[in-house]
Amino acid sequence: ARKMLLLVASMVFYCWFKWEYGFLLIFVIAVTFLGVRVSRARRAPVFAWSSVVSILLLLFLYKYLNFSINVFNGIVSHIGADGGFDLWNIILPLGISFYVFQAISYVADCLRDPGQEIKSFLDYALYISFWPQLVAGPIMRAGEMVPQFNEPTELRIENIKEGCKRIIEGLFMKLALADGIAHFVDEGFLNYIHNTMLDNWTLAFAFGYQIFFDFAGYSSIAIGSALLFGYKLVENFDFPYAAVTPRDFWKRWHISLSSWIRDYLYLPLMNVLVRKPQSDGGIDTVPDDTSGRFSRWNRTKALFVSWAIMGLWHGANWTFLFWGLWHAVVVQLYRFYARIVHPKNTERPWYTRYLGIIPTILFIMPGWIFFRATSLEQAFRMLAKLLDFSSLPVLGYTETYYLGTFLLTVGFFAVFFIREARLRLPRGQWLLTAAIYAAMAVAAFAFFDSNQPFIYFQF
Image (cartoon, rainbow, N blue to C red; front, side):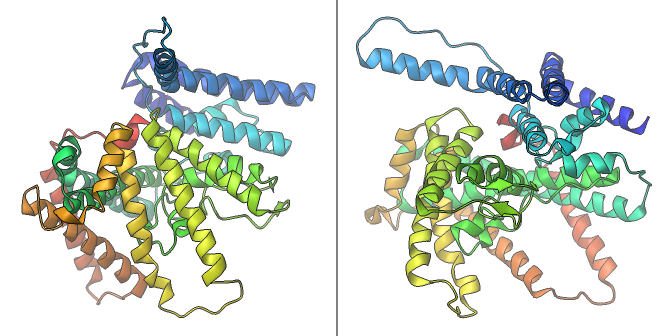
């Protein structure tokens, strides 16, 4: 009864946006569950692979069809031929990329190990549709969630307290921080032609913080909501801008997606068999129980293909593809650097633990320009302006925008280093903690009339 209640609530939650799209969710659940079941019964993996192809076609139809039509029409126009296709009027189903990826991970895990098959359709349906993480993750694995559904849960005050804290943190990050800087980001990217060097550097950092607080805020709300019911979701962010290398960044940013890419794309492209997939660790973290040989060519090929697909996963636009390739280039450059400057078994000074933050963040933040820009022309114009020293002293916007971005940077690293120091609070810590969370709650409710949707809802 508990699982049935959660399933019904999850379906109602999803259908609240557009009830017709509930049938898409049901289709993805049914076709992948039956595909695995029939494949096992007939000992023919073709049925499981067919289910993956069918849901990928569904994803293509709703997310990439118009992009493909635009590309085709552009080619036809370029060669001077007549013809072309009209664009379809399609509303992207909420969270389709997330639950399609969860379904693919289940099918792949069952093909690797038939013992991973879920016998109960109710368990599988709840795993795919569990409402806290349904529309924007974290992307969980069946082996992590289904056992939790089958364990008796109790109403525990520890879960209530921690869940409410995580929800307050998430609301504060989304409403007070992310939405608080959204106006500057929107204005800056709209008027990009007139921006100066400092404008674009500030905008790159500002949007980097906006998307972090927006998405980390949602993830925190999802984790807290699940905790209220006694279920644990994986952490999706770990102070990503405090990364000391580009590889470290992808162990800290959108961890469940980068881990998914690692287990089902990156490592298979390197001919590595993943025996125990897990939704943490990050894309460049190789599990201990892998088999296969690594080569520089395989690693490079896997790197660029994986990041290109990760970029296109975020959206059907050339800008997202270049965003993915930007990170591939940055990681590859770091590999060259590390191979020359830091050979294996070389003892490194202690300060390198933090010194790498500065060059890493200076490479990571400009990449967000591709992510936020509406066209490649806009993205390249803004990137070129980052090196236009002739406009260096000029500010094109209100000074508070630059101050706000600076304060977000200071606040982010202040919290990070406080956590690193593991400082113990005085005896009255409960009072200080209550005051901090009360202040965050008040700040969140002060911005509660914001009409800014979660950025990742469009993916």
